[in-house]
Length: 332
Image (cartoon, rainbow, N blue to C red; front, side, top):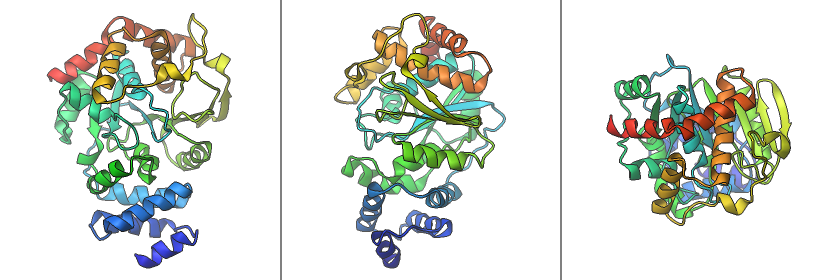
């Protein structure tokens, strides 16, 4: 372990096998807290290489709790987090809107580490009970069209480092890995990334998979589409640049002020924002951004135009269908 750390501090990179072995050792509790902090510090100073990401991911998935939800043509909307923007929970809201259109959603997330409130904080605060039982999750997908996978109860290694991540209070290598670790292995994924270099690395990785994906990065640093700037998108069709004008779908054209997207100061405030938006009582800016992310997600599942998918998302929100997904989920 000391030799690996020494090499990393000398700015050497790990092979895929070395990266895998490192995280296997971590999962076995053979790496102490100080060494974990050192590793996270190194990867805060540089992005991991493609080989390192693949090795880390293989190790975590190898020791994770396995479930099989591949019978569903499902979607996940997820971001790396760590962009320091303190937005409200845009991706999670977009997931409920997509489910409200009749599509299947397998949402993967966790408690906050680099942000004030994670998706798990929201759902737990609303009364949702986390489960890793395949039968229960399939039942949720069958009856509701939505299930939630709380990362720590599927990935023991994440529980090992969760307290350290929270103490650090900043993005770490685990922000980079999180979107790649959905145990339900959804066939479709809208993946937001907080920096362009990492978005390209993900793109190289996803080209070697059978997943249907769109990797997005707002050029002003957000890990989702925020309508505050232009967006770079990577998909199986290649690279595409969306100008702010192209992203302004729907009747009302508007560029969003970043201040309008700021979340609450604590989990309680963010839950109130979450329920307000889902109840159709969000601000114009909040609704617009959530609907735009849902629109891009729907476009992974069908060949409709962005305008038609925006209309579907808007109906899901305005009709109360998206909110009803949450209501059913909490009552099941």
